[in-house]
Structures are given as structure tokens and as C-alpha cells.
Image 1 (cartoon, chains in turn brown, green):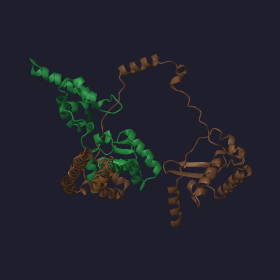
Image 2: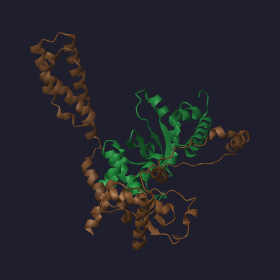
Image 3: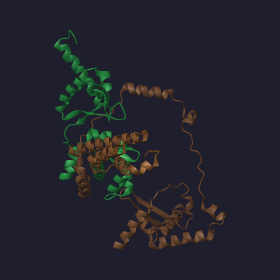
Image 4: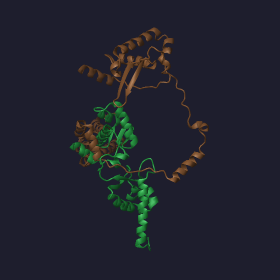
Length: 274
Length: 183
């Protein structure tokens, strides 16, 4: 809001400022523009005109601003009516409810019955092939085009366990004991859904366990079995756990498994129900 | 054209209609369809009439030329037509299956479009994700939404999702809502 220079007057304009603020709230938050009583707004403005006899530049600026804001609200009211009278308008709450009630099969059927797919074909013409060949001929050998494919700059790695041990933040035996405890737990429980294994009574300990488990997987002492279609991840103790399996995993891949507080809460709720 | 016989006029129109069909059927850009100005350049000033003739030929095959207007622009009718995109679509959804999509992906797309339409064409990505998460795992939703955006069914700007160019061309939005509400 603009600052007007006469503080004493600001107090008197309280109602007008309140109305101006309300106009802005409607515009920014998209609330019902009919919440503003346009007639009352104009009457208020008229009352100020009569009683205050606006003369100064600030008064006139405030008057102009009030009219401009009011015009915007009236424009919004017009749009609001247009939207509601259009054939597209359906109460969002009703539609949301309906969407939640429908089975995926029914939703898919509705889509297919309102779907008019675009018909477009791709065809390589002799001319286009010739253009491709000309491009190939003009292209420099890969070795001479290194600048086009620069290697990613080396990322400074975060602190590893070794660094933490070196800084005396963590003791090697403490860390090894924690890993061993997680491994013993996994061996005792056998093949199990990853989240069921990781999650426990507290979210903090669950995150810690996930961290330690990542070491087990990295060292080849545990195996992850992912079913991408069902979104399931199983963990089991590795059969080669006693062999130095780390060597086999030297060129392993990274497997991101998400953990979140909300997910943990859902898991806990499910456990309670069971 | 002046001095042109009826036979010559017919031949010229046929030639133009063939050219228009080739332009519209075969993809020339990443997004299917041809802009009005491209048609004008290839077919001449009477390109809208040529498209009309092509449309009546396609009608017999259950297809039609659809004109998708770009957002905004207050210029004249002619200028607007030049900015519009023309593409061929199936006229009525008669075929049983025209997509290899998994049924749950189509269901998610259907729900996403209906949700966005009900919110006057715009909804925050988070709101859509939260809505879909009632029935699908979050990871699948992130993946599916990114795919719909890539396919052009949904558009995204500043974490706000809107109806994409492809949905505007392919989906009869009113029919979709009616079918959902009537299901």
C-alpha cells in the first residue's frame, strides 16, 4: 500500500484503507469478488467526499486508487459470472468428490470417450535422408568436439565416515557395532519389505537405520530387490555376505529409496491398524 | 483467378487440398500440426477455404481439421488464424483402443485434466499431486505428471499446472466432465 504523508488523516481514512485492503485480498487470493459490497464502497467514498472535502494531492491520489481497485473488483465479478454461466463450470468440490469415488477403469473410460487423438505420421523422405547425410559429412569427429560435451566439474564430496572418524566425531568401533546390529537384525528377519525393515518407533532412528543399511547394501552384505511396477522394495541378507562382496559391488548402481516423515506416519498408522 | 475456366479452378483446388493434406498428416515439427501462417505460405491467401474443402473430404473418413487458438492476442480474425495451429483429429471417439497406455496412467491423466478444468484451468502442482495421492503412490504421480507435461497434455509454469496444447486439441473437455459426473 502507498504511504500517504499525513498521519493524522490516515486515522480518519481507516474504513477506506480497510476496504482497499479487502479489494487486494480478493485479487491475490482469488476469493469470491461478490464478498465486497460495491454499493457500500461507493457510499463510503461519497461520504468521505462530502465530509472531508478532498483537496490535497494525497486525497486525490487515494480517491483515484480507491476507484481503480473498485474497477478491478467489478471486472473480477464480471469474469466470475461468465465462468459460472459457461457450460464448463462445475462445482469443484462436487467434481473432486466424484473423481475420488470413481474406479481407475471408469476414469479411463471417460477419458477415452472424450478423446479425439491427433492423427500425425512421421516419414523420412529421400530429401531428408540426404540432409542427414550432409550433416554427417560436415560433422567433426567426436574427439575434436570435446568442448560440446564438457566433463562435469568435480563435485566436492561431503564428509565421509572416514573423515568423521578422523575428526574424532565418530568412533570406528561405535560405527562398526551399529552396522553389525543392523545386519544381525536383517539376518534374523530375513527377506523383508524395505520400509518395514527401516521404519521403527521413532522417525529419527528410522533415518539412522536407513543410513546404516545403505552401508550394508554398499558392502554387499544386503541385497535390494526392486519391483518397479508394484513400487515395492525388498531387502534381504546377501548370500555372499561372508565373502568379500564389496569387490563385486565396486561398480554397483545407486538406488534411491525415498523416506519421509509423512510416509513414516502412514506406515505407523498401518502398523497400528494391523 | 481471372480468366480461369471451371476445370482449371477445380484442378488448382484439388492440388491445394492434396498439399494441405500432406502438410497436416505428416509431422514437420516436434508438435504435430501446422501453423496458419505456414498454410498461408504453402497454399495462398485462400488457405482457410482450402482447409474447408479438405475438412469435408476428411469428414467421410471420420476425421476433421481442428483449429487450436493460441492464448491471448486481440488482433483481427485473419491475423489470429495465422497464429492458430491446425491439426487433424479423429472426429468421434469410435475406436476401442488407440493407445498403448496402461489403464492406471490414463485414469491419472483423466483425473488430472478434470481436476484442472474444475479449477478454472489452473491448479498448483502440489494440489494436483495431493489429490492424486489418494489413489496412487507419490513416486508414480511425479513420474506420470512429468510425462503428461512432456506429451503436451498438461502445461507447467511456476509450479502451476494448466491444460496443455495436446489436451486442448484432443480432449473434449465438456464431454469428459459430463462423463465423469454421469459415471
